[in-house]
Image (cartoon, rainbow, N blue to C red; front, side, top):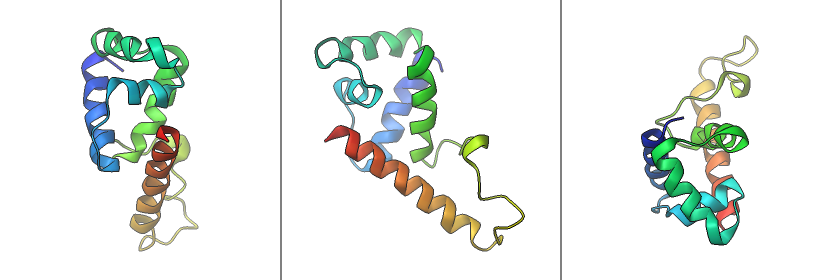
Amino acid sequence: MTGPELKQLRQDLGDAIGRPLSAADMAKLCGLAPGDGADTIRRWEVTGPSGPADKLLHILAMASDRHPILENFNIFDRWDVDEKERPARREAFREKMRDEIRERLE
């Protein structure tokens, strides 16, 4: 993930949960220390995150309709899930991801 992609992700996640996210909110989502975490996010918005934070952000991105559900999380396009049920199941999954973000921000 690049810095501009992280900036866009912050906006996309804010849209998904219905409120704007600050750099401090993004730091909290990544499990960064409250004091320096926002500064780290601002640096990453230029250089891009790395390591575990990058992977976590890719997972959290699935809360937004603008980001694909990652292959290893996509249990909806299997033969045992009726095609008519797939959109509703995808939306339920995204809503669970949104709930996860809201809980992390509390």
